Image (cartoon, rainbow, N blue to C red; front, top):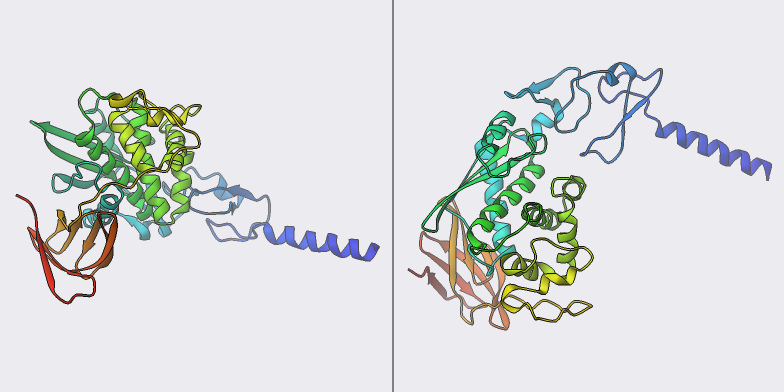
Length: 364
């Protein structure tokens, strides 16, 4: 028995020693004295840092670990470690490619639930100082320390123009999350009826919900954690995520457009079913399963987006690009279609097992 206990203690000691870092993650030198443990939003475990590096005042703006050498300095003074500099978005071309993919996924997410802004949306990178200056143009300025993107919208006679700005020097996954959030702002601008009032935190919470759902679909666990842990929406993102889990996005979107309340009450989530046109609707518990969004009984081309080099076609509830095959809902059933070609005003499809091509045109 004593021998068994001794072996167990020895094993625990070895495991504990193995868990303590022996080399500094910053300078790579052996740590001979005290070990300082630093956490990073993009690393699953805390990182060991020596006493010298722990006292450094320079840190990477992405991984938040101390910096000693081999770093990139951005125009606004932020620093990037060598590892993050290689995977961060630093050009508008990179940003536009990411945004195109984000838009495509959100088109699927919000299909049939209102106008989907497309060619009236522009996007570009901006530094920290630029974002701070631009935020002053908004009714509710952002916190400069948390702002990673913002959207400026102009409208005249219901004709909208949206300009999105995203902070440069962010990881691609974070840029995608920010793009989703900002695109949700453009959707809100074009789909919230006059007279509908939403609390500011609820507006931001809805945009974070769209971003959270996209990150869930892409299995970006770290970005989901970042969204839920920030204090940006004063907790409304948590209320919206929980409500969406119970009632699905279809009901949340309807509430955003025509609900009675200005925010989600965590103590009474069933209020999302109460809307201005039918405020006498009884609230059931457990929640009823949301009905799928109605779709046409025939194939209809509902929109074309993207660039001439990479176009996307929205057919009924499915977004397709050239060469892609997918199931498309058709009334109460669905059919498999393959996208053959997309032009400025039409899409060519193969439907089912037929080799015959079918061309759909945008309605004038």
